[in-house]
Image (cartoon, rainbow, N blue to C red; front, side, top):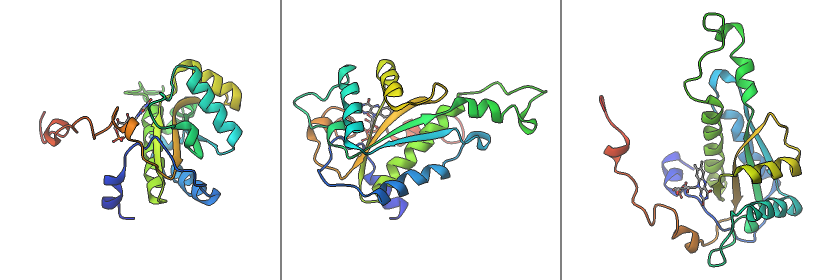
Length: 202
Ligand SMILES: Cc1cc2nc3c(=O)[nH]c(=O)nc-3n(C[C@H](O)[C@H](O)[C@H](O)COP(=O)(O)O)c2cc1C
């Protein structure tokens, strides 16, 4: 699919049809992450793919228990998604990379202008969202708050030096009018181009 056709189709989908997604589809989607940019080529991006029913149910349970809940008047989100992908980052990859000779500034690691490990996680998750659409699928994303992140870390054996950034759900999209009514471009206007992009001078 051409990028110009793909991008307008990009939106968070929070409900999925009960149609299985093949292993090959998932493999192609997650493989795109290796093409994500990373500061200094630190490659701190990591993913944890959860397709087994038991694992997905555990994530849905933890998220629900933490207060992140699918209200009864909305479509089931995590419960309906055949694929969950935890988007992760390993900050230490950046410190290790930027302590190598070619990255030192006056003999020391740089002052980080912003946390590049989270910047790169954003690039990583964007590739997932777009690659899902390219496969004819849909994707959604939610943050994972502290308590839930700790429980998921324990349940799935995620090491302490790897941070959970977000949870991406993937599957064949189903109607999600309840969710769409709450948070998306259908209910809130998109910022005007001039508001978002300035030219030559602020
Ligand atoms: C870092 C991040 C965290 C988000 N967390 C949530 C979330 O917790 N729950 C949710 O419903 N959507 C979440 N979203 C999705 C946004 O609400 C969504 O991208 C935004 O409303 C614009 O809609 P669109 O992506 O469909 O165009 C998150 C998006 C990002 C980038």
